Length: 537
Image 1 (cartoon, helix red, strand yellow):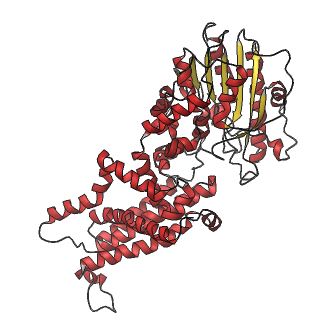
Image 2 (tube, one colour; image 1 turned 90 degrees about the horizontal axis):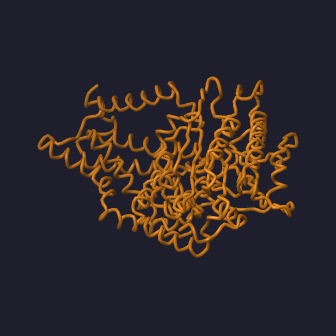
Image 3 (tube, helix red, strand yellow; image 1 turned 90 degrees about the vertical axis):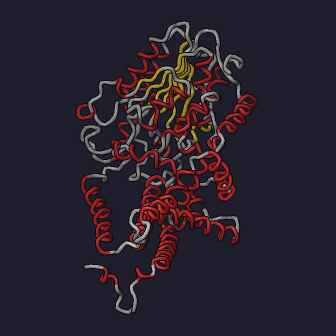
């Protein structure tokens, strides 16, 4: 097959004899297909619920704003091939793949694709189990490579290039500049800042679902990324500092060298809220009676993204106040080091310790946690964990041993803040994790009871220390337990704030439950502990 293979029976001419017209038509065809398929990034119900409220004129502006994004992707495929039909097919495939990924993500955790997900691509392939992405196996990659390289090869063979015969090198460089120059300029401050300001005016709001409805998946990803690049974090942090100084008792330094242990329990929720009366959690029940505050926690995200709840708790910052950083705060953690709780504690002379029995590079914690004020990190490499022997995650019992050791080695004259992020309750809840159990719900309930037993060991040991001790325990988000509920009728998790050892009061009486947001949890603890205002700045 040669160039004649592109002659259409009903046309008295060959398409590639009119390269400019053909290229323009291919681009317009790409736009039409992309505008049509972008609608499937969200279910119809969600599209209606998050439709643009800004009127028909803005709808036209939104549509026009998508055209240059499509044009740049089209130019990228064209610059590498000089084949209009291939560029159209590549562009449509590119956008449709993004839309398909967004729909799959929404189906799983009820959030469309966002720009910060791109930063997790390597982690998704590296930690397939934790992302429930075990289908990304040899078969997947075989099909993907056959499609990408097979289809590309067919186009390269059958479709003629329209690169001019004269000045080929010049035209190649021009096209490469058009295709990739604008992306590179986004990283150049004098271009990025006004572009980001323009995009912020275009977006008006940072609601990811509304942005996806208005601009399609990839358009939303690009525009939010531009805002993320251009946002002035020093201004945000300055404003936050004023808010924190005005509204929060800034901590700590009470006599007796207090110890605060915050335990973030992965995917923990008391299933008895949902009628599961076979679940036995005696430790949780006992600590609720001993708590100065307990109840339901409004976490930052339902069913996943532990880092969002984690950052909200340790920072005390409302997600809306940190702008587009809220989706993946550890990407720019250093900007918030002066306003988060561990940083304040460290500057006040506290010993700060982060313990997490998983790979230290996951979610960039190995870089973010020191920047946020943790002077010591204990991660998976600090545990003798063999998945084939011990299961996919370090158990809460093993984690408790490590936490107790950290608390026991804290000098008597030093105050301590230990933040623990567990993994034991994380899915998938597959056969083999707990004895002969095979049902995901039964496996999850059994692991909850194991967590409750570990919590008993920890609280009883902390209660014997010769210092004021405060234990904060909470679940980071509801589990992705779709065989039980999808979504959970009430995604709020559970929390409690318990005084132990010398922090206990002889006159304590059980208190009624009350709700709290994740970012207010440590502030609530500090108020109960009556820790002083003027020692942490």
